Image 1 (cartoon, rainbow, N blue to C red):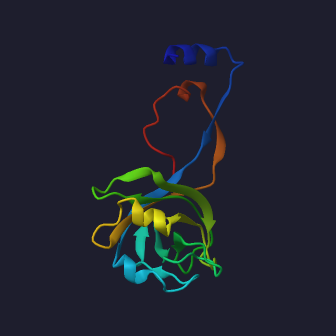
Image 2 (image 1 turned 135 degrees about the vertical axis):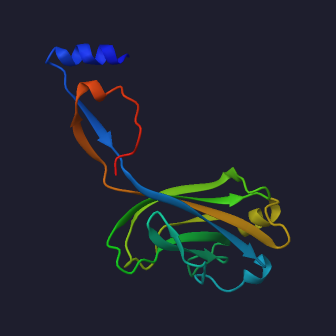
Amino acid sequence: MSNAFASSIGASGGVTASAIVAPVVGSGSHILRIDGYSCTKGIGNGTHIASETFAAAGHRWCLHYYPDSPNRHGSGEICIFLMLVDADANEVKAKYTISLLDHDGNPRPQHIHAGEKTYSSRDALTSGVCLNERSVLEGCGYLKDDAFVIRCDIIVVKEIFTKAIPVSEVFRPVMKREM
């Protein structure tokens, strides 16, 4: 539909318009390399190794790597959890993707895990993903020289809202995201 059409329907006086807006606060990525993978196995179920703290999307985060499963009962899964480490953050709504990368740095569809959560610095354990059973990781070719690589992409969003807009703006290109 053309802008001329939008102007003509708006001129009739009987047409209104609104928008659903999902504003993005910021985004960022962190790459974590697990060197010496075989030495991380066996540290114990429920025990993690934390990455360095990193800044992304206006907040400080870290990744928790669980080589022997995050629960005490053990499942043989290798898991990665995203943690918000800002001491003063009340609630941060974030979408994340955690990917196992191949040797060229590309994520493979069968090893991409996405989720979303409202994070708080008070959370003891936050959202995470279990990448694979250990045997799958060890047999899929992602381990090279006893190392593998994870990438975590984070998008922090504000609350989604609706707003009235002029009919003439319905078909305009979106030039910038509303913050």
